[in-house]
Image (cartoon, rainbow, N blue to C red; front, side, top):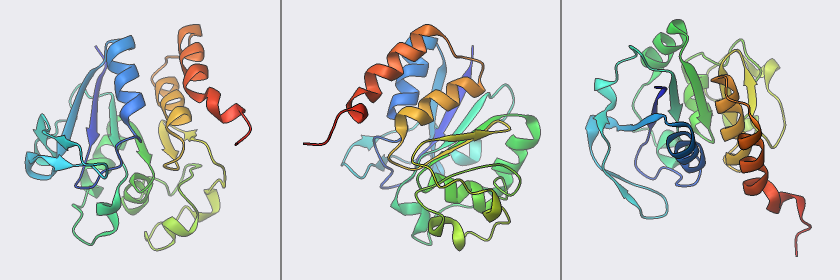
Length: 191
């Protein structure tokens, strides 16, 4: 069974990892868990209270397939936990790493984006992250996958879902149909 952990903090962006976690758990049988600093409940930017299954400090990389960092305002608050050691260890073990919105800042701060093509909300969002990958930044509105690292702006949960699943070897007709359904509104002209 594929194991996935999503890291959440106070004021996490509800929509950013909802589609990947729901799709992975419901349709592909993943074992999904959520981790927060100290294992404490957190409230999303939309007001949803989440009680996680584990603390960040208790994350075990053994048999873990996917580690995601959900975005949210907390990552730029000066109170965010340092995930650098955890993310670098996960990368060394071959765990798929994914960050969306300000979760990409966390990957950049950890040095994970220094050698892979990546994106974020904007190039400026990563400038003060202290990373060496600026030349590999892709200025696109969809997810970018490179060497089992997936990044996306906060407005791209559909392509984020697609690229995360593809990095885990899932790319079938059912996924294509499901993602087309969820992304259909983007093919329509704005009213």
